Length: 111
Length: 253
Image (cartoon, rainbow over all chains, first blue to last red):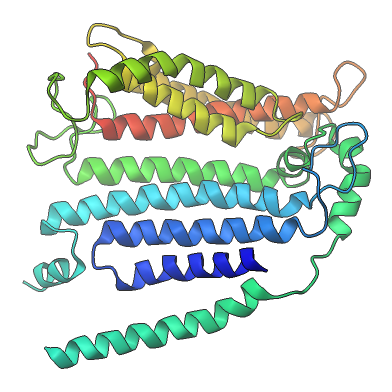
């Protein structure tokens, strides 16, 4: 149970980073933390049905569920793609507005 | 002004409470995880795909379509990132995009001054020595993905870090083709072509798209998973390496 509570806290930390921080780069880092919390949550869920790693060497049984692990492999790659694109967009905003702060960017857009 | 701050704090608090109320039951639920998929895979996974690593068996066997789409997403992300960066005036490494002369970019100057903070002797020595070892480890992960933890994506990312290490650590006069834009570009295109050919090769063997054409007495069933792992590893490694080296803005003539 304790690991689930910690993962919930990690999820909320990532979300509050997206919500509260004014710096775009910090928002992207918050998105990454949220992504990691979800990935770890799936791994934790998948290991409730077994104990061994899902590599069926001779004599190995009672393995954890490999489906969430394969799913999270996809999620990690997509997370990398999202981070790269978001950072590129943040750089473009920085070039346009001269700042990473969303209030300054908003003000410079209204000019 | 003070009212604005209060309103913002209040809004944040309400939003966080709502998100917590939605996420808490999901994270803290005690519903038992269904073990049907695990039981089936444990019983039939090796016979179906030939890989004893069940994660590889899933993402290259049962759900290979998903992996195909994922590599396309990765390709789109790399090309989108490069095009956004080069259009917004970043001076990428030569050959990695249209280079615009700009002082305010994050990249290194063209001819590598030794005093640059990013490039100390320590980093040069460590990354230069470590690069080939990391590359070798990446190839190990890629080639043994059906037997041990690893696979195309993981090995590809480790290969990309090896390429970035070599790009950072190589001396000014040392030149390697591995960190050039044209070479990485060719490897990525070739990887995608090979992936498409491998996906379609099942059609000619009468097994359908992404069917296993190597399933016969000559090779084991795992041969197709090894081929897919190698192709995906090369593609992911060159794609992510391309993106990272482009952002380093390293001059390489």
